[in-house]
Length: 318
Image (cartoon, rainbow, N blue to C red; front, side):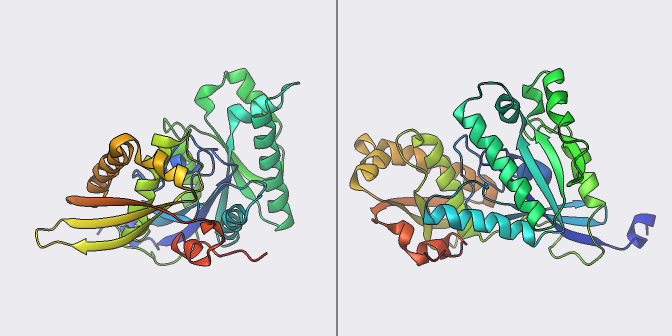
């Protein structure tokens, strides 16, 4: 028996929060060395709290990839923001991730509207943490996209801020600095038994993971034509005798014109989405997948409590 086996185990939750497109999903995937959360260049991709699991020596860390925190306008927006703050409230540690190039742009005399919104979202999150009396670990992401002198100028504004326990400079895309952040987080986790099996990398039903994979592919394929307010539901999951699985999913859109865009000429667009989704599912599930996609129009699905339940969100009243 090694000396390490004599040590007590630790286990805890880390909420990764930030403005939309700060790179939260990319960071969580990098932390666990697996694709758990979907990643696109489109904002507000993550809709619910997704748990990803990794182990550092005798410590199990459960990362909670939360939706981006932003100024909500619609009911779905409010549900997503509530889910993000809920993940932070329940966590043993909080990582506030910052899109550093965008924040640096916001400090210029004439920043772009997108940079101003990102900066304002980040400052609102900071205020929200202060009101809840929570301190966070500040992680400046995408450092590889900035000159060193610009990066240091941004960091200088926060290094004396007592609201942050520690400041890290990372690139979730390349992995630069991520291992140091992970080791630091492991050192903050409370003593206790592990909550998941040693080889488990996610706490997400396979049906939901399959739906997330398809939603990622459709967002990448038709992001310019289709709004992000589409949803994918896995309606059936049938285990086959040969070890493969038959998956039937429905993509809900709000209007007939959106359905036409999604189907594409001769059904080519939906076939391409299905092919790419099936490839990722087979890689994730390590088995053959028979995927069947259907597109249905459901007007005002954003006001349907059942749809929120399917996404793992609480339906906000009012």
